[in-house]
Length: 364
Image (tube, rainbow, N blue to C red; front, side, top):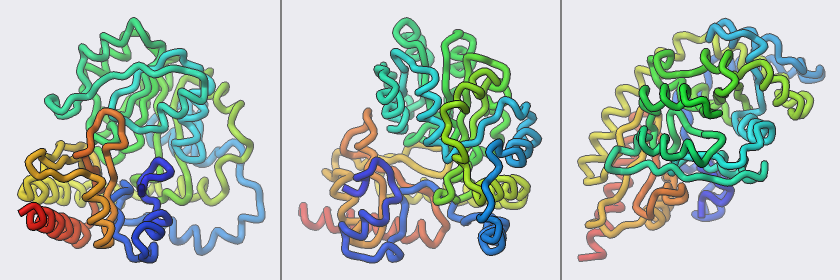
């Protein structure tokens, strides 16, 4: 299984499974910006090595100041972490929810963090008939049973934003809510959907962001969260000293200034998402519309193909796809792929076409 450690992008496991060097694979299982890191990252890595003899700023002042200016949020409401994963874990440990409402399917680390803190899970179904959008009645049905909601906005693996009325009702309900906005930067009009600014003043709302996905720096590990200062202080007390290293702090501060990179990313995504959805549909696959840089699709029952079979076949072609059946709430027909550059996307479509032809021939 390629997702041996719970995530896509595991090139080491792919190397073991398919006998090809890591560099030979085209990875659609990990949802990174295919434009690669902004130019500032290359400069910092080539020149900043001289300064790693110094300790990083324990208060991450420069990056927090940049984030404060960019999003119009008080500095004391911002905490920077070693990736969103660290902040998800710390938040669950501080909030200590008894029962947490999770949308299904959603990112597995929410559940892991809740269980580590001793809590239980209340499942909120996302249904294919509604294109996996969170429904108001399902959220309201959870109110009597949960003391915390932990939701992706946009959600992974569905690529769906929480509808505005649902989100507004949830915030007004008075329930504590943690929103994971790890992919929000891929939404061109993110200010119309993000709750970062509300979280700075609302004690019932906490928002977590990843900087690794949009800026394509997963190996650096960088994320931040916004919450009422009282929560920030409590969460910070549990954080390991110097959690965010020197290079991560410098890179985070620099990439926020690259407006051209943002524009190019949105333009690429608009063009390639439209093209790839069309191509997958022409292959007969059932595609879920997405707000972000990845697509969830399923193999129709008539094809008789499971995602594990597809993953094996595609891996032998040097193409990695995500087994979405591992997300609770999805069956063995579901697959998730990142949206990449046109040349790579064409190779994905060609690989899927070869696979479907082989399966059809073998069945015939």
